[in-house]
Length: 191
Ligand code: GRF
Image 1 (cartoon, protein in one colour):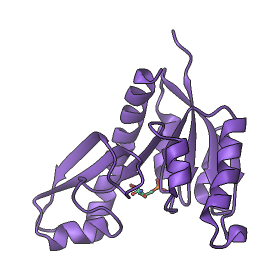
Image 2 (spheres, rainbow, N blue to C red):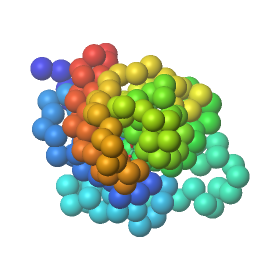
Image 3 (spheres, helix red, strand yellow):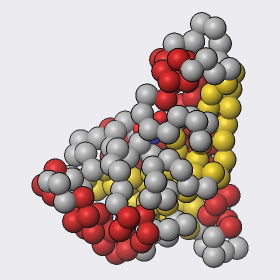
């Protein structure tokens, strides 16, 4: 059997997708590191409870210099021999430096059926647009936000009674199933 791929999960908040990635039993990957750009993010505690190294790298001291933040993040990931990065609610737009340094090894989960509704407020926008279905997408990250190669999607019908909140809740359940599956498939296919 080939070795499990070493995955770093980057977060900014509660980390429910991180939790799903930690809990899924996988022969293809191991979560080796969790980094949050927000100190005190709930996901850091989830990582610690799972026995995974959890580091806060606050972006604020870097001010407007996004690349300087990313260079330190990159150095940390390289030092820990990370092979794949999974963004899971990481609320920073990445510069070309980082995206290109991790090309084909950088995944994200987005709460819409891309290419529909890139960006924020996806659930409210899906409702406003009168969509009949909604869902989530795991994709590779490229320079243009939310537009890399799609690795997998999960979909569900939108009900007449739905609000942005009920959609968010049901999509999140789909995310928790989709992300571990797509990450494992991708890790298996990576040399
Ligand atoms: C999820 O909806 C994900 O699709 C989006 O940010 C949210 C993160 O939630 N990118 P969590 O921190 O994983 O609970």
